[in-house]
Image (cartoon, rainbow, N blue to C red; front, side, top):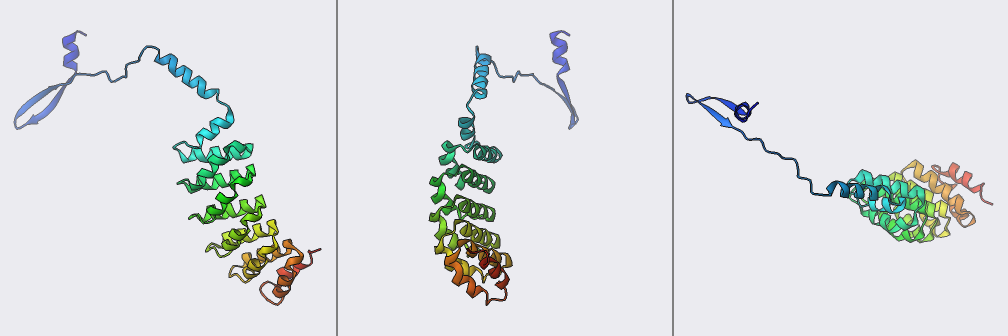
Length: 234
């Protein structure tokens, strides 16, 4: 097809407007980006660099990705790897906009088991998301750091019964006698599971909790749980 034929093939006929027909000529433009000399080689080099990164640095870098899914998955993998070099970056993610990422960061910090993260986790007990508070309470129990005891006692008054229950369990895991008074109050909680686990945690604390459990024997709602906890104390 010659130049004139090609030009005619691009003529768009518009319906008659006020009795006249119009013909509009459209010129095609090449929108493909022009390749600069050596750009293909540079792209290959960049790809090769990406593919040959060491796992830990690559994952830590991915914690800053714009996609929350990528950040969350990176948290989980770093936790499984117990990568201590990622602790500071994971602590920052406890304030991530995504509650899912915050939760995954807390779990990863628990796996890594670096006590340096305890103050940040204590602060995260006040997170706006219930799921995050519940997870953080559990992680603090797993870390068994007595620094977390006052904060966990405070969490026994969380408006979420699941968070209260998890805090009670963690206090029992830590086993600090300083939690006895708070756990005794929790045996009077409106939620049955909170009362049950408060009694169990008193039993885990052991002899210092005996007086509190004896008082619980007089409470019809928890006396069975209290008795079970008492007989396990040695």
